[in-house]
Image 1 (spheres, rainbow, N blue to C red):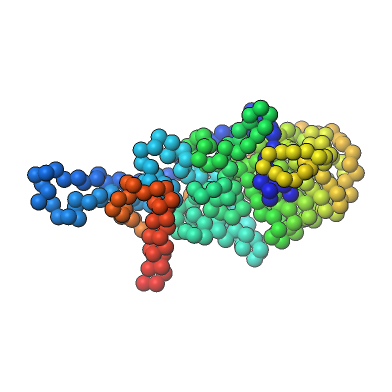
Image 2: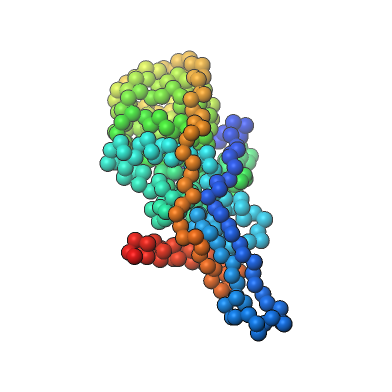
Length: 350
């Protein structure tokens, strides 16, 4: 589907749900004072104590590194914020419910720990700080939708508003994933896109997807879903694209509220020349039918007893190098990656 090309569509911002979570507590900064001796005590202090002794207790490596590189920046917290706690909890619930379903599911979700495969012992941070693809494969954090003169674009992580990053896109196509539509997707509060193209999924499509009011794209082609397109989906007024092609057992009509039949069009961040609703290779009759009322959405809220994000099991302190105040963001991030890699090697080979 268009998802793989990073498609973006128009929609009114009045339905966006802002991130209301408090920032994750996984990033703990313990900053010791910088020791700069006065003239009279210069001879009394050993050289080691006259250097910078600021140290950081790390849980989210990249975020900490970037904060240290620009400690005086008023926008540093926004730019380098952790993933929103509610999004992390939703992702953990999804992982725990599906990682053991099959070998394919296990492989697809193997990076959904810590800061991804590069640092599974770090604090849980699916979004990370290195672009919208994030640390956990298949989850993207593209920032805010910005609509200007009828055209929309992603803000990108560094320009997004709010104290934490939102998981906005779910991409796990082309993996042969089996079983029914994964129910735990309903807990992601900020998804704009779901892409499960070209898997081996079965069963009926869920009515509760209508509760995910931010959705712009639903890409489910090349699976084995059965039944009909739920009429409740007609309530997803922000949708620009629905792809259910090549699900041979899908039948029935198309809810009136879904996008117009597939047609030529242009949307930002996509090279696909067509948008709309497509159903080729199914038994859907192409007729439009009345939308159904909204379903009960109370069960889509994250349970109070849902797991909390891991704070990680990193070394307690990593000392900053001399001259760290002059480091660029990239140099600081690379320094911490190297130190953590060294820690991991020594931990695994005592």
